[in-house]
Length: 262
Image 1 (cartoon, rainbow, N blue to C red):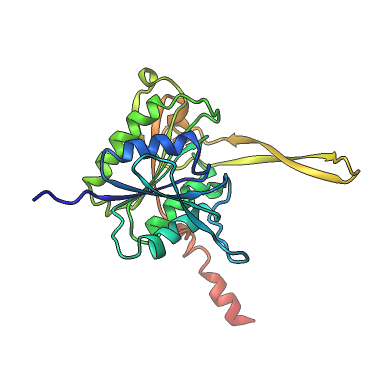
Image 2: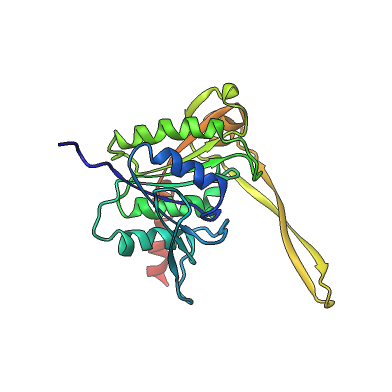
C-alpha cells in the first residue's frame, strides 16, 4: 500500500488567474494533492488584512486541470483561513505555498505583502509555509529560474519538519536561470519606501492622489536578502510573526518603574 500524497494548499495575492500561481500549481502537483484557494481579483499590498465588514464569497472554479480550486472574494489571509477552517477543516494541510508573486517581497516589503501574509497566516496555524516571489513585475515574465528553485525548495520542505521556523520568504532574481548563482540564507535587509503622492484632478474637477515611491536600502551588509538578489542569488529568509524587539526589553524596563511613580 502506498502512502497518501501530501496535501498542499496554494494561494497568492495576484489573483487566481495570474501566471505566477499557474506555474506554482503545476510544480506543486508533482509533489502532492493540490487545493487552490486564491483571490478572485488582484489583492497586492493587502498585508495581513482580513474581511470583517463585508461578506466573503467562495466559488468552486475550473482554472487548473484536475486541481480542486476555489476563487475567494476576500484577501489572501481570508483565503488561508477559509481553507483551514472551512474548505479543508477535516484534513491536515501539509504545506502552504503562496505565489509565485510578480515582484520582489524582499526586505520591508514583507510587511505590505499579501503573498507573504497568506503564508504567515498558515505558519501561525502550525502549517509549514513558503512565500515565493519573482523579481519581475511583467505579465510576460520568464519563470524558468523561479520554477527550478521552487521545485527544489518544495521538495526540501516536504522532507523536513521545519521545526526551527515554519515560514520562509523566498525571492528569485529576475535573471536567466544560468545566471543565478544559487541560494543564500539571509536576514531581512533594513530598508524603507520613500513615498510620493502624485496629485491630480479627475474629470469632475475633484482632486485625487496616487501613491508612488522609491525603494531605499542603505543596508550594505552582505548577509541580507537585498544584497543576495542584487548579486544574483535566490534569497531565503526564515521569518516569524513575533514582532517583539527582544533586545529592547531590558532597555525599556524602566518604564514600569516610571509608571509606578506617577
